[in-house]
Amino acid sequence: MTEASRASNAGFTLLEVIVAFTIATTALGLLFRIHASSTATVLLSEEHRDATALAQALIAEHSVTERLLSFTRTGSMDKYKWTVRAEPYPGAAAAATEQRPPYRLRSIAAEVTWAFRDRERRLALRTVKPFFDEKP
Image 1: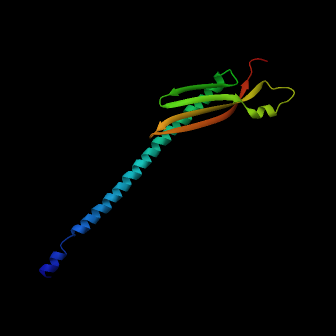
Image 2: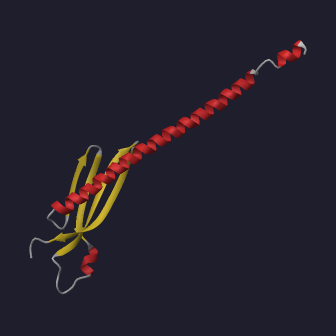
Image 3: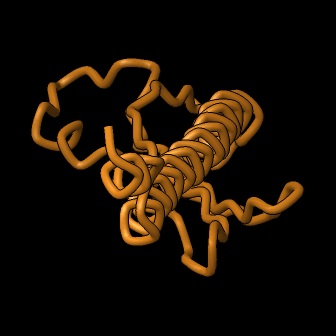
């Protein structure tokens, strides 16, 4: 083997090294972006889970403790702001009979809002619960 052929096969050229570093940097950048995105998704899902639990608890609490057929209550807990609204269930009026049952139906809705990454998030739950009139 001659001296010239050994020198040409002695290693990587500068261009090959730059291309390899560019590919490695791009791959690592994509991996970092994927990881950051998945972390944000996990954080948002945890906050959504907490907001759902809060809305369910608010509906359960207010369906038992509130003695008014219609009401609106607001409040906040940690970073969550909430509103609970109740009103007579509109479908119950259509099913009127001669003898009224000892209860009426009311629609209860809980709405929870919070901020996540400079955007307002909103979760709303609605259910229908029986309401027992204390007056005959």
